[in-house]
Image (cartoon, rainbow, N blue to C red; front, side, top):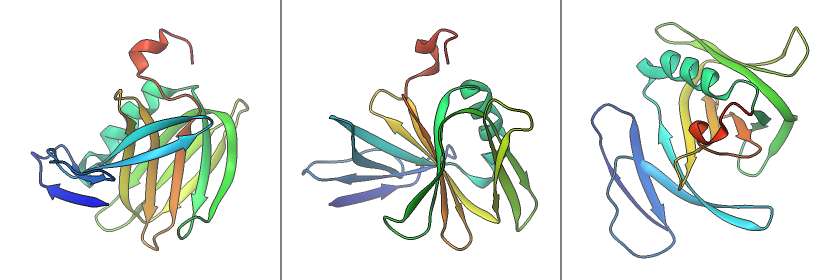
Length: 164
């Protein structure tokens, strides 16, 4: 894998990883190939700057309210445990202070919604398809554990036209 990195203009950082030779432009956006079902999907990952977390998750929650997601917890490579599968996303909330805080993921049709809390988050990243659709949101805590929100059918919100 070839990896190149550059620093951007405050929109987050991107890095690129390639399985093929070639020149990379962009700012700390990583590419990976995801094999889901019977098709191949190229994904890019964008790290969200901490000062943008609250605004990002608020907008993310509004864009994807009711969309079907799976929520997974991962500690170490390849050790993914699903907390929920194919449930409606109800929102992500960031409660942050200077050095710690938490993020909460709300899912489900019932009230109260199912909640997963991430204490002391240190990283927030969004994975996008080649078409620009958000496919996953990953929250990493201070111990390296990751909470992953995966969309069942990633697509750009403007293509959904009111159907979740």
